[in-house]
Amino acid sequence: MPSFHHPDAPDAQGQFGPYGGRYLPETLIPTLDHLERTYREIREDDGFWSEYRALLADYVGRPSPLFHARALSDALGGARLFLKREDLNHTGAHKINNCLGQVLLARRMGKRRIIAETGAGQHGVATATVCALYGLPCVIFMGAVDVARQADNVARMKMLGAEVRTVNQGSATLKEAMNAAIRDWIAHPDETYYLLGTGAGPHPYPWIVREFQKVIGQETRKQLLDQTGQLPDAMIACVGGGSNAMGFFHPFLDEPGVRLYGIEAGGHGLHTAQHAASLGQGRMGVLHGCCSYYLQDEDGQIANAHSISAGLDYPGVGPEHALLRDTARVTYASVTDAQAVDAFRWLTRLQGIIPALESAHALAYARELAPTMGTDQILVVCLSGRGDKDLKTVQQFEETSP
Ligand SMILES: *Cc1c(COP(=O)(O)O)cnc(C)c1O
Image (cartoon, rainbow, N blue to C red; front, top):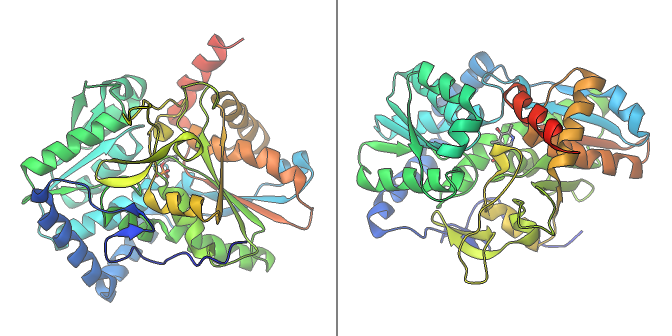
C-alpha cells in the first residue's frame, strides 16, 4: 500500500497529478468556468442535494441492492462474492445517476438545450430519459457502427423524444461521437449544456461525474457493513471511461485494507491491436480536452479501440484513473471478449441475472480473484448494468467463434 494520499478534488489547474486539465479552444473556457462556478455553488446548496436525492430514490429506485451471490461464491470456493446491483436502476445502468445530477446543474445554469455523446446507447438513453422528465430538447451524437449494433437503444432514444445524429467519421464509434458533440458545443456554447457521460473530458467534468457516481460506493459501504459488519477485502469494477469504477471506489480510497481492481476491455487480447486497454497499453496524451492515458500509434495518433461491449470501446480513460494507476492505489487488468461472454453466461445461469457485457468484464476477473481469497474474505463486484441490450451480440459471438 503506497503512502501517497489520493486528492479528494482536482488541483487549481483542474488536474489529478499530471492528468486532466482543459485542452480545448479558448472560446470554451468561459463555458467551463461557468460550469465549475455553478458546480462549486451547488456543492454547498442543501436544496440541490435534497432534490437530487429525492430523484435518486423515487425515480431511479435507489438505493440499489447489494446482493450476496451465494451460488457464485460456492462455485468459486473462495471469497464471499457480493454484487452491487446498478443493473436495477431505472434505464438499466449507473449512467442515470450522473445524468440526473448534470441536468439539475444545467437547469441552474439556465441552459435549455442538452447534447450528449453515446457509445452503447446507454448514456444516450439515460440522457434522453432525464430530458423527457424535464421537457428539455435533447440531441444525441452516436457513431454509425454503434447505431447499427445498438438499434434498440436508438429506438428508445427516439421514443423518448431525442434527436439522434449519426456520426460517420473515422471508426464511427464513441470517439467520433464525442468529437461531434464537442464541435456542436463550440458552435452553441451559450444555450447548450454538454452532458458528458463518463469521468473523462475537460475539467471539471471528471470531478463532477465522479461526485454524482459516488453514491454507488457510499451505498455499498453502508449496505455491506449492515449485512456483514465488515468492509470489503477487494472490489472490482469495469473501466470504460471510468465513471462506475470511480464512483464505486472513491469512498474506499483511504481504506488501506480494501484492494481495488479496475478491469479494462482486453478485446481479442493485449498482444493484438484489437482491445481497449488504455491503462494497460496506452501512453500519456491528450484527447477530448483531457490529458490521460490513450491508445496511440508511434506518431501519437489516437488508435481505434475494440471491445465486444460498446460501452468499453473508448481509446482513453478518465484522468483520475490515470493517477490511480501511477500511484498503484488501484490495480488495472484486462479480460478478453471471450472471457466476458463466458462470465455473462455464467452469471445468467447461476444466479438468474443477465449482466451487461461491460459488467461481465468485472465478473470475469472476479472468477480469477475469488478463489485466491479466503472464505472469510469479501469481494464486491459492481454490476454496472443489465444485459438485455447484449443478447444479440452474445449470440453472434458464440455462432462465429470456434
Ligand atoms: C457505459 C457503461 C460502462 C462504462 O462506462 P464507465 O464510465 O467506465 O462506467 C460500464 N457498464 C455499463 C453497463 C455501461 O452502460
